[in-house]
Length: 342
Image (cartoon, rainbow, N blue to C red; front, side):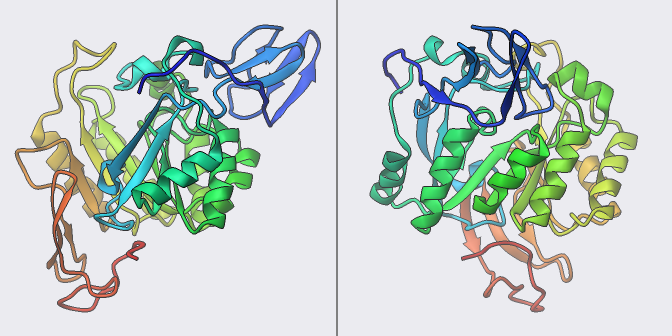
């Protein structure tokens, strides 16, 4: 997408005044900003004592994607979604594959003006039943996400966030009623590693999962396995045990293969054996739907009945080849398959 360089003057939500500045209350970073200073997310700035969302209405990318690319495998399979993103992110992941937009300010990237109403019009024009707020971090362009989501709900369009989930409870509680689905990137199950690799902490992400579940938002969870960092059997066991103990056994878990990227170019790609072992660990813990991503050599994307193991949805990459579900149930034994199917 090519556009002009400009900024929004939209006053942000969730901040308060402090001596010589403002404090942002959107995420756990709690950035304290003097005049002209940007938050860690690079999208919110103190301008004359007001916190401004500079990215409001200024996406740096809009694409039509298959829903499976998010990845969402149990939510409106084989449908298309309008994917939208602005610059900025409140994490600083050393393996970020979208760093050219996530680690930029809006005036450093090509963006175009797209008000919320135009996003809805685009969905109708392109016959997209859902909008995915994705690529960077939709919770940092919170005001834009919220306003689009409200309009989408009024027009029977579904809302999806693809997020790292690093947000405070109150903003999420206020947004959750407008969300239909989310893929949350659970980076690891270790607080120290979160600080080292992602510039964040673990507990707020776990809180996000619990809040979205409470609001009946359809959830899928992605865990990128990075060799020697977050792929130990002990860490994976702890993570999967927590998910099962907290009621997430019916929600899909996607283990994704790492490839050298950004500031982790010295680490090799995840061995396939590690992904297969991770799937075994998750299934042993009680996770019913476990998928493997970025693994062209093996079929890790198919959906099987957890009761009789019948192949229900055959996928190749982001394409659904066959779908044998019958009204959300196994075509063989009638087992109800968790998800949003129509």
